[in-house]
Length: 426
Ligand code: PLP
Image 1: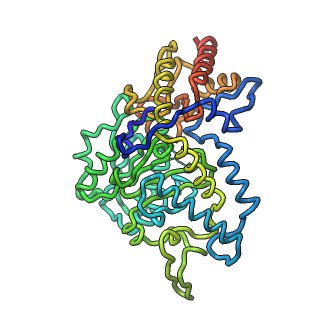
Image 2 (image 1 turned 60 degrees about the vertical axis):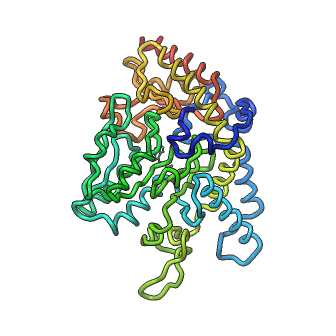
Image 3 (image 1 turned 45 degrees about the vertical axis):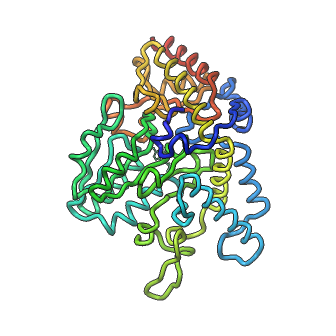
């Protein structure tokens, strides 16, 4: 795939040495890929929605439930000790994955959506006031728009947007006008799920910090495809979802700078997040537990940690190189299909492993239905990015998204399916 390592934060020299990458061996490790759908071998091109899970992650989940299942932190017995060790160990793995110095800066959440809501509520409600401004972009997933709309409505703050050009890239020349002393937050996606655009987060963070705004990054599609180093990127918060990167659903994380997290009030109240509870008030547990009320998704976190191990073992530079080759081929092939229009950046350096397109007058839902009959799974719709669709004057696109287990044969099956679509609608 096609994210440049420098754009994502860790420069190429700092990346680990690429290992030999064998797509057939990788593919064999994902049980769900080995099935027929509608009588045809499944081709899964919907990883931007959720990735498939390797056997190593499924085994980690099974092992936890079969051997170690117990609640974390509170128990003074062997199973609870094991469970806590695996759970906290996974936190350390996720911290390492994004270059965080300290696992206590990593808060478990249900996913990116909850992580962004956590910042909007816990930091936003105490620090954003009437007349303040929050800068977003038109490229955002609804998860990185709606929490800020709610915050703006509650506080009287104003939302301002970075607009897009005709390739779905941010118009950064407008940034100096948008960033003022009233800007409190710049909330930006690392990589667009709708178009695959890779945003220059580091440059945006530098500009935002010049006006003392905090930078919150929606990393749902960023931490998936390349090494991410939050310190190198210079951001303040980074949100991610385990299920997009081979982990189970229902577990994600928020990384935040320790000084910010320490100053923030809790997001939710309950067990686990307290130090002492009195009749009228309570005191809070240390980080990260202050933000983790109730029994956490223990198995999810352990599975997320196993996914990090799995991807680290293959090596992100090897995965990136494979995805880049695949994207080069996919873009070339899809662009050559009659009546196709591809949305998103022309340059591979700015284009992640997503191809968003329309085909003549065929509705994207029809494209997806016809492809499904051929065993090819893509996504059709607005991709939770209605502002992007509006920008291009369309209601929906068809989206094929790729990951480490996809191959050129998958692209060929997609193209064959599109010719069937063309035959019906042409
Ligand atoms: N942001 C982006 C760019 C996404 O692609 C997604 C999911 O598709 C999200 C946020 C929300 O992630 P989750 O549903 O895992 O919370």
